[in-house]
Image 1: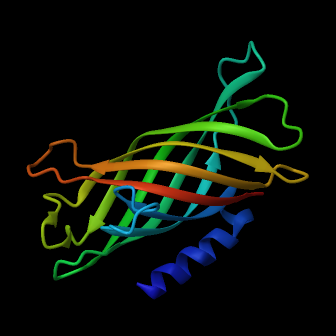
Image 2: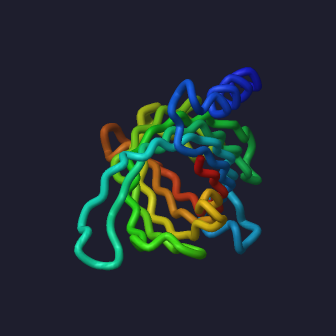
Amino acid sequence: MKNLYVLLLLFLTATHAYALDGFYGEYGRTDAAIISSAAKARLYRIGAMWNWNRSWFNNGAWHVTGFWDASIAQWHGDSAADNNQTVTDIGIMPVFRYTPKDQTGTTPYLEAGILGLHLISPTFLYTGRKFSTGFQFGHILGFGVRMGPRHQFELGFRYQHVSNADIKLPNSGMDFEIFRVAYWF
């Protein structure tokens, strides 16, 4: 798994060869565990972003833009139950972002990722938290700010739900509360 992270890091740093528009790192927890100590899983994720270079609803001061979000993550089981596992999650998701057209100063945004595709392995996190399929769907809602002289830095928060949409039962699913740091080229 360590070799996979090295390969992804090399991929992310080769911006001209792959026309990346940005990359990010995220840390998250499940079940409101950021505030409480009853954590059931921790999430660590790195990813890359590709702008669509399109915008919609341009009549007012705000508009909608979008980008592709590709990532690799690990979910670490953090339960008092036995048999904690590490789940690897590879995903891709279209993300729509609502942001001001005027990009001066610190700029806020709202975002929604819809119908992301995720492959996970193994399909259980710990005793009592099993997923019936390795194929999962992901959705996010988030907010944050972009800042810096070129708006290259980003801080944000995301709520993510991942489940198999009842393709096969049981459909345990996971909900993560995620802190995000990103850099745009």
